[in-house]
Length: 252
Ligand code: ADP
Ligand code: MG
Image (cartoon, rainbow, N blue to C red; front, side, top):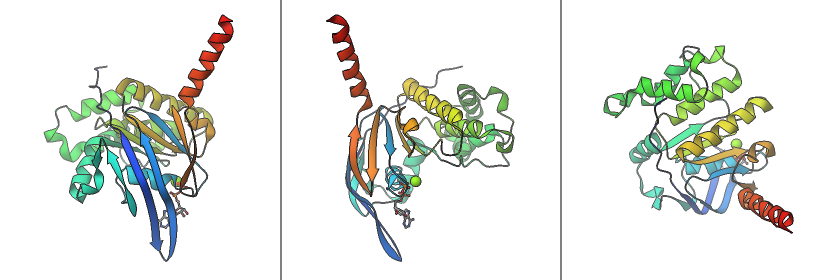
Protein backbone atom coordinates (compact mmCIF):
# COMPACT_ATOMS: atom_id res chain seq x y z
CA UNK A 1 0.00 0.00 0.00
CA UNK A 2 1.28 3.47 -0.87
CA UNK A 3 1.94 5.74 2.08
CA UNK A 4 -0.57 8.50 2.56
CA UNK A 5 1.31 11.67 3.57
CA UNK A 6 1.68 12.33 7.29
CA UNK A 7 -1.14 14.44 8.59
CA UNK A 8 -0.46 17.83 10.08
CA UNK A 9 -2.03 17.52 13.49
CA UNK A 10 -3.90 20.29 15.31
CA UNK A 11 -4.29 21.40 18.91
CA UNK A 12 -7.72 22.21 20.37
CA UNK A 13 -8.37 24.61 23.22
CA UNK A 14 -11.78 25.19 24.79
CA UNK A 15 -12.02 28.25 27.02
CA UNK A 16 -14.96 28.73 29.40
CA UNK A 17 -17.12 26.87 26.91
CA UNK A 18 -20.85 26.91 27.68
CA UNK A 19 -23.86 25.68 25.76
CA UNK A 20 -27.46 26.38 26.66
CA UNK A 21 -30.20 24.67 24.66
CA UNK A 22 -33.35 26.73 24.81
CA UNK A 23 -36.14 24.99 22.98
CA UNK A 24 -38.96 25.38 25.48
CA UNK A 25 -37.10 24.94 28.76
CA UNK A 26 -33.44 25.90 29.14
CA UNK A 27 -30.80 23.19 29.53
CA UNK A 28 -27.25 24.10 30.52
CA UNK A 29 -25.54 21.26 28.63
CA UNK A 30 -21.98 22.58 29.07
CA UNK A 31 -20.91 24.83 31.91
CA UNK A 32 -17.70 26.87 31.42
CA UNK A 33 -15.53 23.96 30.28
CA UNK A 34 -11.78 24.55 29.96
CA UNK A 35 -9.89 21.91 28.03
CA UNK A 36 -6.54 21.74 26.25
CA UNK A 37 -5.94 18.92 23.77
CA UNK A 38 -2.44 18.72 22.36
CA UNK A 39 -1.48 17.80 18.82
CA UNK A 40 -1.71 14.06 18.13
CA UNK A 41 -3.19 13.35 21.53
CA UNK A 42 -5.74 10.52 21.76
CA UNK A 43 -8.34 11.71 24.26
CA UNK A 44 -11.42 9.90 25.57
CA UNK A 45 -14.27 12.01 26.88
CA UNK A 46 -16.20 9.93 29.40
CA UNK A 47 -19.31 10.59 31.41
CA UNK A 48 -22.86 9.37 32.02
CA UNK A 49 -25.66 9.89 29.52
CA UNK A 50 -26.70 13.54 29.40
CA UNK A 51 -23.39 14.84 30.82
CA UNK A 52 -22.67 16.95 27.72
CA UNK A 53 -20.21 14.70 25.84
CA UNK A 54 -21.88 14.97 22.42
CA UNK A 55 -22.45 18.69 22.94
CA UNK A 56 -18.73 19.21 23.58
CA UNK A 57 -17.76 17.09 20.56
CA UNK A 58 -20.22 18.90 18.29
CA UNK A 59 -18.86 22.28 19.37
CA UNK A 60 -15.28 21.16 18.71
CA UNK A 61 -16.45 19.75 15.37
CA UNK A 62 -17.96 23.15 14.46
CA UNK A 63 -21.35 21.49 13.98
CA UNK A 64 -22.85 23.85 16.57
CA UNK A 65 -21.89 27.19 18.11
CA UNK A 66 -21.26 27.78 21.84
CA UNK A 67 -23.50 30.06 23.88
CA UNK A 68 -20.43 31.43 25.67
CA UNK A 69 -16.69 30.89 25.57
CA UNK A 70 -14.53 29.99 22.63
CA UNK A 71 -12.68 27.24 20.82
CA UNK A 72 -9.21 27.70 19.40
CA UNK A 73 -8.06 25.21 16.80
CA UNK A 74 -4.34 25.62 16.19
CA UNK A 75 -4.69 28.99 17.92
CA UNK A 76 -7.46 30.24 15.63
CA UNK A 77 -10.77 31.24 17.20
CA UNK A 78 -13.27 29.36 15.05
CA UNK A 79 -16.02 31.86 15.92
CA UNK A 80 -14.30 34.14 13.40
CA UNK A 81 -15.23 31.77 10.56
CA UNK A 82 -18.44 32.23 8.58
CA UNK A 83 -20.67 29.25 7.81
CA UNK A 84 -19.07 28.67 4.40
CA UNK A 85 -15.53 28.80 5.78
CA UNK A 86 -16.54 26.40 8.57
CA UNK A 87 -17.97 23.97 6.03
CA UNK A 88 -14.67 24.11 4.08
CA UNK A 89 -12.73 23.69 7.32
CA UNK A 90 -14.76 20.59 8.26
CA UNK A 91 -14.29 19.08 4.82
CA UNK A 92 -10.53 19.66 4.72
CA UNK A 93 -9.48 19.15 8.37
CA UNK A 94 -11.99 17.05 10.30
CA UNK A 95 -13.09 13.42 10.20
CA UNK A 96 -16.29 12.29 11.93
CA UNK A 97 -17.27 8.82 13.17
CA UNK A 98 -20.76 8.16 14.58
CA UNK A 99 -22.36 5.51 16.78
CA UNK A 100 -24.79 4.39 14.05
CA UNK A 101 -22.09 4.41 11.33
CA UNK A 102 -24.23 6.72 9.11
CA UNK A 103 -23.38 4.87 5.91
CA UNK A 104 -25.62 5.19 2.86
CA UNK A 105 -27.36 1.79 2.69
CA UNK A 106 -27.64 1.67 -1.11
CA UNK A 107 -23.95 2.41 -1.75
CA UNK A 108 -21.01 0.01 -1.62
CA UNK A 109 -18.19 0.36 0.92
CA UNK A 110 -16.02 1.94 -1.78
CA UNK A 111 -18.73 4.44 -2.74
CA UNK A 112 -19.43 5.30 0.90
CA UNK A 113 -15.75 6.06 1.50
CA UNK A 114 -15.49 8.21 -1.65
CA UNK A 115 -18.79 10.02 -1.06
CA UNK A 116 -17.64 13.05 1.01
CA UNK A 117 -15.18 14.12 -1.70
CA UNK A 118 -17.03 13.11 -4.88
CA UNK A 119 -18.26 16.70 -5.48
CA UNK A 120 -14.66 17.95 -5.16
CA UNK A 121 -12.72 15.21 -6.91
CA UNK A 122 -11.60 17.36 -9.87
CA UNK A 123 -9.58 19.62 -7.58
CA UNK A 124 -7.97 16.85 -5.54
CA UNK A 125 -4.29 16.17 -5.86
CA UNK A 126 -4.95 12.42 -5.81
CA UNK A 127 -7.23 9.86 -7.44
CA UNK A 128 -10.22 9.53 -5.17
CA UNK A 129 -11.07 5.91 -6.00
CA UNK A 130 -7.50 4.79 -5.49
CA UNK A 131 -7.30 6.60 -2.14
CA UNK A 132 -10.58 5.00 -1.02
CA UNK A 133 -9.31 1.54 -2.00
CA UNK A 134 -6.07 2.11 -0.06
CA UNK A 135 -8.00 3.18 3.02
CA UNK A 136 -10.35 0.18 2.86
CA UNK A 137 -7.28 -2.01 2.56
CA UNK A 138 -5.74 -0.25 5.59
CA UNK A 139 -8.84 -0.96 7.72
CA UNK A 140 -8.79 -4.63 6.69
CA UNK A 141 -11.71 -4.66 4.23
CA UNK A 142 -10.03 -5.63 0.94
CA UNK A 143 -12.66 -8.27 0.26
CA UNK A 144 -15.60 -6.07 1.23
CA UNK A 145 -15.25 -3.09 -1.12
CA UNK A 146 -18.24 -3.98 -3.31
CA UNK A 147 -20.51 -4.91 -0.38
CA UNK A 148 -23.32 -2.66 0.81
CA UNK A 149 -23.68 -1.92 4.56
CA UNK A 150 -26.48 -4.51 4.92
CA UNK A 151 -24.03 -7.21 3.85
CA UNK A 152 -21.50 -6.28 6.56
CA UNK A 153 -21.26 -6.84 10.32
CA UNK A 154 -21.54 -3.85 12.64
CA UNK A 155 -17.78 -3.89 13.19
CA UNK A 156 -17.13 -3.98 9.44
CA UNK A 157 -19.57 -1.11 8.86
CA UNK A 158 -17.75 0.97 11.46
CA UNK A 159 -14.43 0.20 9.78
CA UNK A 160 -15.91 1.51 6.51
CA UNK A 161 -16.90 4.62 8.47
CA UNK A 162 -13.33 4.95 9.79
CA UNK A 163 -12.01 4.77 6.21
CA UNK A 164 -14.57 7.39 5.18
CA UNK A 165 -13.47 9.66 8.04
CA UNK A 166 -9.89 9.42 6.74
CA UNK A 167 -10.62 10.17 3.07
CA UNK A 168 -9.78 13.88 3.46
CA UNK A 169 -6.58 13.13 5.40
CA UNK A 170 -7.96 14.98 8.46
CA UNK A 171 -5.93 16.69 11.18
CA UNK A 172 -8.57 15.84 13.78
CA UNK A 173 -10.77 12.73 14.17
CA UNK A 174 -13.94 13.09 16.25
CA UNK A 175 -15.81 9.91 17.21
CA UNK A 176 -19.07 9.87 19.18
CA UNK A 177 -19.66 6.47 20.85
CA UNK A 178 -17.97 4.66 17.92
CA UNK A 179 -18.33 1.29 19.67
CA UNK A 180 -21.86 1.88 20.96
CA UNK A 181 -23.47 -0.41 18.39
CA UNK A 182 -20.98 -3.27 18.14
CA UNK A 183 -20.03 -6.10 20.49
CA UNK A 184 -17.04 -5.96 22.84
CA UNK A 185 -14.64 -7.76 20.50
CA UNK A 186 -15.54 -5.56 17.54
CA UNK A 187 -15.38 -2.52 19.82
CA UNK A 188 -11.82 -3.41 20.85
CA UNK A 189 -10.92 -3.85 17.16
CA UNK A 190 -12.33 -0.40 16.32
CA UNK A 191 -10.36 1.21 19.15
CA UNK A 192 -7.16 -0.64 18.17
CA UNK A 193 -7.69 0.55 14.59
CA UNK A 194 -8.17 4.17 15.71
CA UNK A 195 -4.99 3.96 17.81
CA UNK A 196 -3.05 2.45 14.90
CA UNK A 197 -4.31 5.19 12.60
CA UNK A 198 -3.28 7.88 15.09
CA UNK A 199 0.15 6.29 15.56
CA UNK A 200 0.83 6.22 11.82
CA UNK A 201 -0.82 9.52 10.80
CA UNK A 202 -0.57 11.60 14.00
CA UNK A 203 -3.99 13.20 13.81
CA UNK A 204 -5.50 14.50 17.04
CA UNK A 205 -8.23 12.04 18.07
CA UNK A 206 -11.18 12.53 20.42
CA UNK A 207 -13.47 9.62 21.28
CA UNK A 208 -16.64 10.13 23.30
CA UNK A 209 -17.77 7.09 25.27
CA UNK A 210 -19.55 6.07 28.44
CA UNK A 211 -17.61 2.77 28.42
CA UNK A 212 -14.46 2.59 30.64
CA UNK A 213 -13.14 -0.32 28.56
CA UNK A 214 -13.18 1.91 25.48
CA UNK A 215 -11.72 4.90 27.34
CA UNK A 216 -8.82 2.75 28.57
CA UNK A 217 -7.39 2.75 25.02
CA UNK A 218 -6.81 6.51 25.15
CA UNK A 219 -3.70 8.44 26.21
CA UNK A 220 -5.88 10.53 28.42
CA UNK A 221 -9.41 10.46 29.83
CA UNK A 222 -11.49 13.56 30.55
CA UNK A 223 -14.56 13.03 32.75
CA UNK A 224 -17.70 15.11 32.27
CA UNK A 225 -20.60 15.34 34.70
CA UNK A 226 -23.52 17.74 34.42
CA UNK A 227 -21.65 19.75 31.79
CA UNK A 228 -18.49 20.20 33.88
CA UNK A 229 -15.11 18.47 33.79
CA UNK A 230 -14.93 16.73 37.15
CA UNK A 231 -11.72 14.79 37.08
CA UNK A 232 -8.95 14.01 34.71
CA UNK A 233 -6.46 11.21 34.62
CA UNK A 234 -3.51 11.08 32.35
CA UNK A 235 -3.15 7.37 31.77
CA UNK A 236 0.13 7.79 29.99
CA UNK A 237 1.86 9.56 32.86
CA UNK A 238 0.32 7.12 35.33
CA UNK A 239 1.74 4.26 33.28
CA UNK A 240 5.10 6.01 33.11
CA UNK A 241 5.06 6.44 36.89
CA UNK A 242 4.23 2.76 37.25
CA UNK A 243 7.12 1.82 34.97
CA UNK A 244 9.51 4.05 36.89
CA UNK A 245 8.48 2.52 40.21
CA UNK A 246 8.75 -0.98 38.73
CA UNK A 247 12.21 -0.16 37.41
CA UNK A 248 13.30 1.24 40.76
CA UNK A 249 11.89 -1.82 42.50
CA UNK A 250 13.74 -4.06 40.05
CA UNK A 251 16.93 -2.08 40.59
CA UNK A 252 16.74 -2.09 44.38
P1 ADP B 1 -24.29 13.05 26.27
O1 ADP B 1 -23.74 13.00 24.89
O2 ADP B 1 -23.23 13.07 27.35
O3 ADP B 1 -25.29 11.98 26.53
P2 ADP B 1 -25.53 15.53 25.38
O4 ADP B 1 -24.43 16.45 25.07
O5 ADP B 1 -26.22 14.86 24.24
O6 ADP B 1 -25.06 14.45 26.46
O7 ADP B 1 -26.67 16.31 26.20
C1 ADP B 1 -26.38 17.14 27.33
C2 ADP B 1 -27.69 17.74 27.83
O8 ADP B 1 -28.21 18.61 26.85
C3 ADP B 1 -28.78 16.71 28.11
O9 ADP B 1 -29.52 17.14 29.20
C4 ADP B 1 -29.60 16.73 26.84
O10 ADP B 1 -30.92 16.35 27.09
C5 ADP B 1 -29.50 18.18 26.42
N1 ADP B 1 -29.57 18.36 24.96
C6 ADP B 1 -28.73 17.84 24.03
N2 ADP B 1 -29.04 18.23 22.80
C7 ADP B 1 -30.14 19.02 22.93
C8 ADP B 1 -30.95 19.78 22.01
N3 ADP B 1 -30.68 19.77 20.69
N4 ADP B 1 -31.99 20.48 22.53
C9 ADP B 1 -32.24 20.50 23.84
N5 ADP B 1 -31.52 19.84 24.76
C10 ADP B 1 -30.47 19.11 24.32
MG1 MG C 1 -24.07 11.64 23.36
